[in-house]
Amino acid sequence: MHQDIEEILISEAQLQEKITSLGQQIALDYTGKNLLLLGTLKGAVPFIADLARAIDLPLEIDYMAVASYGNTTQSSGIVRIIKDLEGPIDQKHVLIIEDIIDSGLTLHYLVDLLRRRNPLSLKICSLLNKERPRLKNVPIDYYGFTIPDKFVVGYGLDYAQLYRNLPYIGILKPSVYSETSEPAKQHKSMAEEV
Ligand code: PRP
Ligand code: MN
Ligand code: MG
Image 1 (cartoon, rainbow, N blue to C red):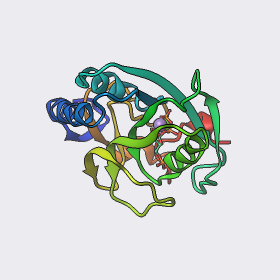
Image 2: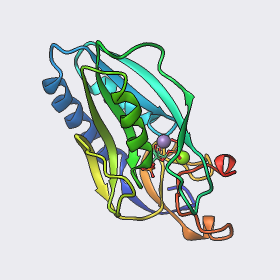
Image 3: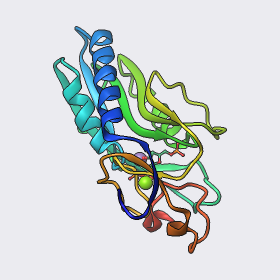
């Protein structure tokens, strides 16, 4: 286990088992449909890579990158696009692939934006569903695990851009982040906090 990790919350084997069953469910639901998996950079990269291989259907993959304006203590809810999709989605069934829903702001913004592009359908698949009051309510169609309101990293999730490459979801030792100001929005990178 990494020295900065206090406890493994979800092991590599638990992740893979859940992703296999999510993939099977999604394959059933999207059979015969023009499926586009829309991954959110950067956190969802490991998840979408594994999930896509667990979905035994023809499908497309594309990515969007979004970032929040504002500092970490007061989330403005204003999100801007860093990288957009390559093409239109009006002939596609879009499934957004996220690593975690925390405040709900990122997904709320994305859903709002994508709806205006008239996809054939728009649903959400989030690996993690954090148990906390949402700032914005977003319907999650598929999720892997509900987790407590703890500081988690790994399998795509970062703290200050690190730990994304851990193969499991772990709780970060408070000593790792206690020297800086307490982050209200743990996953925002330092660089984005202007
Ligand atoms: C994190 C995470 C989700 C989002 C969830 O991304 O990957 O996309 O925050 O938080 P929310 O529900 O409060 O909006 P982040 O913006 O840190 O970018 P990253 O994926 O590049 O780490
Ligand atoms: Mn993200
Ligand atoms: Mg982040």
